[in-house]
Length: 314
Image (cartoon, rainbow, N blue to C red; front, side, top):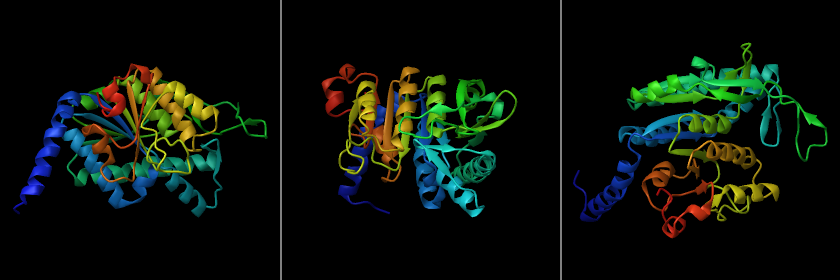
Protein backbone atom coordinates (compact mmCIF):
# COMPACT_ATOMS: atom_id res chain seq x y z
CA UNK A 1 0.00 0.00 0.00
CA UNK A 2 1.43 3.35 -1.07
CA UNK A 3 1.49 6.05 1.60
CA UNK A 4 0.89 9.72 0.92
CA UNK A 5 3.82 12.11 1.17
CA UNK A 6 2.44 13.46 4.45
CA UNK A 7 2.15 9.98 5.96
CA UNK A 8 5.70 9.11 4.86
CA UNK A 9 7.03 12.31 6.42
CA UNK A 10 5.33 11.48 9.73
CA UNK A 11 6.81 7.96 9.74
CA UNK A 12 10.31 9.17 8.87
CA UNK A 13 10.18 11.94 11.49
CA UNK A 14 9.04 9.46 14.15
CA UNK A 15 11.82 7.03 13.28
CA UNK A 16 14.46 9.76 13.31
CA UNK A 17 13.21 10.94 16.68
CA UNK A 18 13.30 7.44 18.15
CA UNK A 19 16.81 6.47 16.98
CA UNK A 20 18.74 8.39 19.69
CA UNK A 21 16.67 6.69 22.40
CA UNK A 22 17.10 3.27 20.82
CA UNK A 23 20.86 3.78 20.89
CA UNK A 24 20.73 5.10 24.46
CA UNK A 25 18.68 2.24 25.88
CA UNK A 26 19.93 -0.75 23.87
CA UNK A 27 20.93 -3.57 26.25
CA UNK A 28 19.59 -1.60 29.25
CA UNK A 29 17.04 -3.11 31.63
CA UNK A 30 13.53 -1.71 31.96
CA UNK A 31 11.19 -3.06 34.62
CA UNK A 32 7.61 -2.39 33.57
CA UNK A 33 4.69 -2.83 35.96
CA UNK A 34 1.21 -3.04 34.46
CA UNK A 35 -1.98 -3.08 36.52
CA UNK A 36 -4.22 -6.12 36.38
CA UNK A 37 -7.17 -4.26 34.85
CA UNK A 38 -5.36 -4.14 31.49
CA UNK A 39 -5.18 -7.93 31.34
CA UNK A 40 -8.91 -8.33 31.88
CA UNK A 41 -9.33 -6.95 28.36
CA UNK A 42 -7.86 -9.02 25.48
CA UNK A 43 -7.54 -5.98 23.20
CA UNK A 44 -5.69 -3.93 25.83
CA UNK A 45 -3.54 -6.94 26.67
CA UNK A 46 -2.45 -7.31 23.07
CA UNK A 47 -1.81 -3.59 22.73
CA UNK A 48 0.46 -3.35 25.78
CA UNK A 49 2.27 -6.56 24.86
CA UNK A 50 2.87 -5.17 21.36
CA UNK A 51 4.52 -2.10 22.90
CA UNK A 52 6.71 -4.17 25.22
CA UNK A 53 7.53 -6.41 22.27
CA UNK A 54 8.77 -3.44 20.28
CA UNK A 55 11.06 -2.42 23.15
CA UNK A 56 12.32 -6.00 23.27
CA UNK A 57 12.95 -6.09 19.52
CA UNK A 58 15.14 -2.96 19.59
CA UNK A 59 17.38 -4.50 22.24
CA UNK A 60 15.91 -3.24 25.52
CA UNK A 61 15.84 -5.94 28.19
CA UNK A 62 12.29 -5.83 29.54
CA UNK A 63 10.87 -7.40 32.68
CA UNK A 64 7.08 -7.26 32.95
CA UNK A 65 5.55 -7.36 36.44
CA UNK A 66 1.77 -7.67 36.43
CA UNK A 67 -0.97 -7.14 38.94
CA UNK A 68 -4.29 -8.90 39.08
CA UNK A 69 -6.32 -7.03 41.67
CA UNK A 70 -9.56 -6.57 39.70
CA UNK A 71 -9.55 -10.23 38.62
CA UNK A 72 -8.89 -11.37 42.19
CA UNK A 73 -11.75 -9.21 43.48
CA UNK A 74 -14.13 -10.53 40.81
CA UNK A 75 -13.16 -14.13 41.46
CA UNK A 76 -13.53 -13.65 45.23
CA UNK A 77 -16.98 -12.13 44.75
CA UNK A 78 -18.01 -15.06 42.56
CA UNK A 79 -16.89 -17.44 45.33
CA UNK A 80 -18.60 -15.42 48.05
CA UNK A 81 -15.34 -14.23 49.62
CA UNK A 82 -15.36 -10.57 50.74
CA UNK A 83 -12.44 -8.33 49.75
CA UNK A 84 -10.98 -5.78 52.15
CA UNK A 85 -8.47 -3.00 51.53
CA UNK A 86 -6.59 -0.82 54.01
CA UNK A 87 -4.59 2.22 52.81
CA UNK A 88 -4.83 0.98 49.23
CA UNK A 89 -3.48 -2.51 50.03
CA UNK A 90 -5.39 -5.78 49.97
CA UNK A 91 -5.95 -7.73 53.19
CA UNK A 92 -5.32 -11.40 52.32
CA UNK A 93 -6.81 -14.13 54.50
CA UNK A 94 -6.34 -17.84 53.76
CA UNK A 95 -9.25 -18.07 51.29
CA UNK A 96 -8.27 -14.83 49.56
CA UNK A 97 -4.72 -16.16 49.20
CA UNK A 98 -6.01 -19.19 47.31
CA UNK A 99 -7.91 -16.87 44.98
CA UNK A 100 -4.82 -14.68 44.44
CA UNK A 101 -2.69 -17.72 43.61
CA UNK A 102 -5.25 -18.98 41.09
CA UNK A 103 -5.69 -15.59 39.46
CA UNK A 104 -2.11 -14.30 39.43
CA UNK A 105 -0.16 -17.44 38.57
CA UNK A 106 -2.93 -19.11 36.61
CA UNK A 107 -5.29 -16.74 34.85
CA UNK A 108 -3.36 -13.48 34.38
CA UNK A 109 0.19 -14.74 33.91
CA UNK A 110 -0.89 -17.41 31.44
CA UNK A 111 -3.00 -15.00 29.40
CA UNK A 112 -0.04 -12.63 29.08
CA UNK A 113 2.19 -15.50 27.96
CA UNK A 114 -0.43 -16.52 25.40
CA UNK A 115 -0.53 -12.97 24.02
CA UNK A 116 3.28 -13.01 23.84
CA UNK A 117 3.21 -16.32 21.94
CA UNK A 118 0.74 -14.84 19.45
CA UNK A 119 3.26 -12.04 18.81
CA UNK A 120 6.23 -14.46 18.68
CA UNK A 121 7.85 -13.02 21.80
CA UNK A 122 10.05 -15.35 23.89
CA UNK A 123 8.26 -14.76 27.19
CA UNK A 124 8.85 -16.84 30.33
CA UNK A 125 6.35 -16.85 33.21
CA UNK A 126 7.65 -16.70 36.78
CA UNK A 127 6.50 -15.80 40.26
CA UNK A 128 8.50 -14.67 43.24
CA UNK A 129 8.57 -18.29 44.39
CA UNK A 130 10.48 -19.52 41.31
CA UNK A 131 14.26 -19.86 41.79
CA UNK A 132 13.81 -18.10 45.14
CA UNK A 133 13.39 -14.89 43.15
CA UNK A 134 11.67 -12.89 45.91
CA UNK A 135 12.56 -13.68 49.51
CA UNK A 136 9.79 -12.49 51.81
CA UNK A 137 8.36 -12.71 55.29
CA UNK A 138 4.81 -12.32 56.48
CA UNK A 139 4.03 -8.74 57.43
CA UNK A 140 3.34 -8.32 61.16
CA UNK A 141 0.31 -6.28 62.27
CA UNK A 142 1.08 -2.61 61.66
CA UNK A 143 -0.27 0.75 62.73
CA UNK A 144 -1.89 2.44 59.73
CA UNK A 145 -2.48 6.21 59.95
CA UNK A 146 -6.18 7.02 59.76
CA UNK A 147 -7.32 3.56 60.84
CA UNK A 148 -9.30 3.62 64.09
CA UNK A 149 -9.19 -0.13 64.70
CA UNK A 150 -5.67 -0.21 66.10
CA UNK A 151 -3.09 -2.48 64.50
CA UNK A 152 -4.00 -3.84 61.05
CA UNK A 153 -3.23 -7.47 60.23
CA UNK A 154 -2.86 -7.75 56.46
CA UNK A 155 -2.96 -11.55 56.67
CA UNK A 156 -0.87 -13.49 54.15
CA UNK A 157 0.82 -10.39 52.80
CA UNK A 158 4.58 -10.37 52.39
CA UNK A 159 7.28 -7.82 52.93
CA UNK A 160 10.34 -8.31 50.72
CA UNK A 161 13.56 -9.30 52.45
CA UNK A 162 15.68 -9.70 49.33
CA UNK A 163 15.89 -10.60 45.65
CA UNK A 164 17.82 -13.49 44.10
CA UNK A 165 18.25 -12.09 40.61
CA UNK A 166 20.76 -14.47 38.97
CA UNK A 167 18.16 -16.59 37.16
CA UNK A 168 16.37 -13.47 35.96
CA UNK A 169 19.62 -11.97 34.68
CA UNK A 170 20.44 -15.17 32.78
CA UNK A 171 17.01 -15.11 31.16
CA UNK A 172 17.49 -11.50 30.07
CA UNK A 173 20.97 -12.20 28.73
CA UNK A 174 19.56 -15.15 26.76
CA UNK A 175 16.98 -12.91 25.10
CA UNK A 176 13.90 -13.93 27.07
CA UNK A 177 11.15 -11.61 28.31
CA UNK A 178 10.31 -12.52 31.93
CA UNK A 179 6.69 -12.05 33.01
CA UNK A 180 6.52 -11.91 36.81
CA UNK A 181 3.59 -12.63 39.10
CA UNK A 182 3.84 -10.88 42.51
CA UNK A 183 3.46 -13.98 44.66
CA UNK A 184 6.23 -15.23 46.90
CA UNK A 185 6.73 -17.41 49.97
CA UNK A 186 8.50 -17.25 53.29
CA UNK A 187 11.36 -19.54 54.34
CA UNK A 188 8.87 -22.19 55.46
CA UNK A 189 7.13 -22.21 52.07
CA UNK A 190 3.99 -20.32 53.10
CA UNK A 191 2.63 -18.41 50.10
CA UNK A 192 2.47 -14.64 50.46
CA UNK A 193 0.77 -12.01 48.36
CA UNK A 194 2.97 -8.97 47.66
CA UNK A 195 1.99 -5.65 46.16
CA UNK A 196 3.03 -5.72 42.49
CA UNK A 197 4.47 -2.18 42.61
CA UNK A 198 6.66 -3.25 45.53
CA UNK A 199 7.87 -6.30 43.59
CA UNK A 200 8.63 -4.19 40.52
CA UNK A 201 10.63 -1.70 42.59
CA UNK A 202 12.66 -4.45 44.27
CA UNK A 203 13.42 -6.12 40.95
CA UNK A 204 14.38 -2.81 39.33
CA UNK A 205 16.88 -2.11 42.12
CA UNK A 206 18.31 -5.65 42.08
CA UNK A 207 18.72 -5.60 38.29
CA UNK A 208 20.20 -2.08 38.33
CA UNK A 209 17.50 -1.12 35.86
CA UNK A 210 17.76 2.00 33.76
CA UNK A 211 14.08 2.70 34.33
CA UNK A 212 11.12 1.54 36.36
CA UNK A 213 7.90 2.27 34.48
CA UNK A 214 4.63 2.01 36.42
CA UNK A 215 1.46 2.06 34.32
CA UNK A 216 -1.71 3.01 36.16
CA UNK A 217 -5.32 3.95 35.54
CA UNK A 218 -4.42 7.64 35.95
CA UNK A 219 -2.41 9.82 33.51
CA UNK A 220 0.40 9.91 36.09
CA UNK A 221 0.74 11.63 39.46
CA UNK A 222 -1.92 14.32 39.80
CA UNK A 223 -1.88 17.52 41.83
CA UNK A 224 -5.60 16.97 42.34
CA UNK A 225 -6.72 13.30 42.25
CA UNK A 226 -10.13 14.42 41.01
CA UNK A 227 -8.71 16.41 38.09
CA UNK A 228 -7.03 14.35 35.33
CA UNK A 229 -5.71 17.58 33.81
CA UNK A 230 -3.58 18.35 36.89
CA UNK A 231 -0.71 16.11 35.79
CA UNK A 232 2.64 16.62 37.52
CA UNK A 233 5.31 16.32 34.82
CA UNK A 234 8.31 16.17 37.18
CA UNK A 235 8.70 15.55 40.88
CA UNK A 236 11.41 14.41 43.25
CA UNK A 237 11.26 12.29 46.40
CA UNK A 238 10.86 15.30 48.68
CA UNK A 239 7.93 16.58 46.64
CA UNK A 240 6.34 13.16 46.54
CA UNK A 241 6.67 12.80 50.32
CA UNK A 242 5.11 16.23 50.77
CA UNK A 243 2.12 15.31 48.59
CA UNK A 244 1.63 12.10 50.54
CA UNK A 245 1.83 13.86 53.92
CA UNK A 246 -0.71 16.42 52.75
CA UNK A 247 -3.10 13.69 51.62
CA UNK A 248 -2.95 14.77 47.98
CA UNK A 249 -2.21 11.34 46.55
CA UNK A 250 -5.08 9.16 45.37
CA UNK A 251 -5.58 6.06 47.53
CA UNK A 252 -4.05 3.75 44.93
CA UNK A 253 -1.10 6.09 44.38
CA UNK A 254 -0.04 6.10 48.06
CA UNK A 255 1.47 2.58 48.03
CA UNK A 256 2.97 3.33 44.62
CA UNK A 257 4.79 6.29 46.15
CA UNK A 258 6.43 3.92 48.64
CA UNK A 259 7.54 1.66 45.78
CA UNK A 260 8.89 4.63 43.83
CA UNK A 261 10.92 5.78 46.81
CA UNK A 262 12.27 2.26 47.35
CA UNK A 263 13.35 1.98 43.71
CA UNK A 264 15.13 5.33 43.61
CA UNK A 265 16.83 4.79 46.96
CA UNK A 266 17.89 1.39 45.59
CA UNK A 267 19.71 3.04 42.69
CA UNK A 268 17.10 3.32 39.92
CA UNK A 269 17.72 6.74 38.40
CA UNK A 270 14.33 7.36 36.83
CA UNK A 271 10.83 6.17 37.59
CA UNK A 272 8.03 6.94 35.15
CA UNK A 273 4.34 6.84 36.10
CA UNK A 274 2.17 6.66 32.99
CA UNK A 275 -1.36 5.85 31.90
CA UNK A 276 -2.03 2.25 30.95
CA UNK A 277 -5.09 3.42 29.03
CA UNK A 278 -3.59 6.11 26.78
CA UNK A 279 -2.79 4.58 23.36
CA UNK A 280 0.94 3.89 22.93
CA UNK A 281 1.76 5.63 26.23
CA UNK A 282 4.71 3.31 26.87
CA UNK A 283 6.32 4.00 23.49
CA UNK A 284 5.67 7.74 23.76
CA UNK A 285 7.25 7.83 27.23
CA UNK A 286 10.38 6.00 26.09
CA UNK A 287 10.92 7.31 22.56
CA UNK A 288 9.85 10.97 22.72
CA UNK A 289 11.18 14.02 24.53
CA UNK A 290 7.86 15.02 25.99
CA UNK A 291 6.67 11.66 27.30
CA UNK A 292 3.14 11.27 28.59
CA UNK A 293 3.18 10.89 32.37
CA UNK A 294 5.17 11.82 35.47
CA UNK A 295 8.93 11.48 35.87
CA UNK A 296 10.17 10.89 39.43
CA UNK A 297 13.84 11.40 40.32
CA UNK A 298 15.80 11.68 43.56
CA UNK A 299 16.21 15.44 43.21
CA UNK A 300 14.79 17.64 40.45
CA UNK A 301 17.61 20.09 41.17
CA UNK A 302 19.91 17.66 39.39
CA UNK A 303 17.93 17.96 36.16
CA UNK A 304 19.11 20.33 33.47
CA UNK A 305 16.88 23.14 32.24
CA UNK A 306 16.26 21.15 29.06
CA UNK A 307 15.25 18.09 31.06
CA UNK A 308 12.90 20.09 33.28
CA UNK A 309 11.37 21.74 30.25
CA UNK A 310 11.23 18.92 27.74
CA UNK A 311 13.33 15.80 27.89
CA UNK A 312 12.36 13.07 30.36
CA UNK A 313 14.80 10.52 29.02
CA UNK A 314 18.14 12.30 29.18
